[in-house]
Image (cartoon, rainbow, N blue to C red; front, side, top):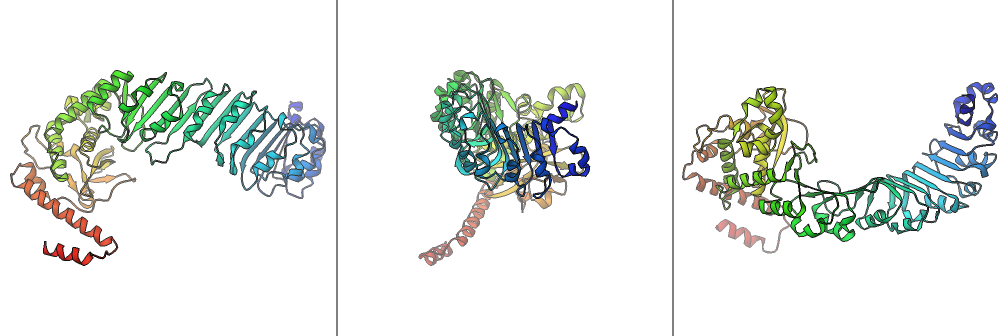
Length: 543
């Protein structure tokens, strides 16, 4: 135990509190010296010279730590093999010239220093076997500055800053490279090939550059066994196909937000050796015909619908649908929307979908009563698109999911909101819907309890398209990215529409035209005055 203690020793200001005890130690046996919290003018600098057998030097501190003085006091710098610097200034070139037999350099949390100058001054770069950079600022230098270490066996890059991780071809020119670790960095798509090709072991997790504003970040993961997995947004799929032969991938997760035609990439995707997973923003992204073709050509098993918080979830029963189930779900929604006039105003479309869903899907009261055997089997399916569309009964979150996805096919923007209803502790979910640029609250789940389970409307919905002021009398949203809803749609408009009164659609059309005209007029007021502004104003007044 004594010998083990002496081989590793930490030197700091606290050691001086028992100086006699320090002098009794066999400092000449220390091989790993850890130096932290040393005053720049401390007597401890002289004690360093008594440690004549140091092979590993670890210096921890801050920008005030006198690293040059510490290295200058190493009695036999030629014995030093491992240098670890944490949160300090990199030593000067003169200090590095004394370290002629370094095998490993680790820089952690280094700022305001020239890493390039440090590496350039290493006397025998051919002896370096390991480089570790953890949260190091490269001051816009390329990672190519490590290419001089031809005998490198291990390279770690963890969240490096201001570093161009480009031109990684040099990794293939390092015949002894055994392992490379890249974590929390950003790479270009074109560099994937350089990492996949090498025979060295890899442990890589990195982001992939994109000029798009994606829901989910593109990412690359290469495990030590060589398995390559990529998460890519559909908008960047073309970039990926151009950068790498997809046969080198073991798994791929494609995030489709509606801006990617996956059918165009079937030939490329067919090359992938392992699992293909597709996640979509909503079911407007893949119609029935596309789903059937993807199933046939790619042997696709699941389609994942992104959670309404914009988070990917992998609970198979909740967010992942078997491809056959997805096709049934999309078919069911298409059949519902056959009764919606695609040429109608947004308000009419929203009300029609609201009425159809509220009168044809029942609230699952049995599940609400929390009967255990029934609840365990049906909770997930009643909380997504499945039970409501295929079994015609679900709970609040199921209604909200179906309403949001149905509106997405009609091109109407909506979202889901978590919160509480009437002080009840259990979480409740509802929607916010955007109509002609304005947002409104709607709780189709609660309204379904009052609406008849038939096509004939018998009870007026009371939570349909309300302002925050009205809606929050009973609903309290969780803090988050909720939209501001300044006004309600007049209840008489909704009531007349649900009673199928013939004149109401004409009234709604006129009502919506006035809103659009107001929005257009307000928008024009914000624009710079043009040379024909007076003529336009005169024409508008005449109209």
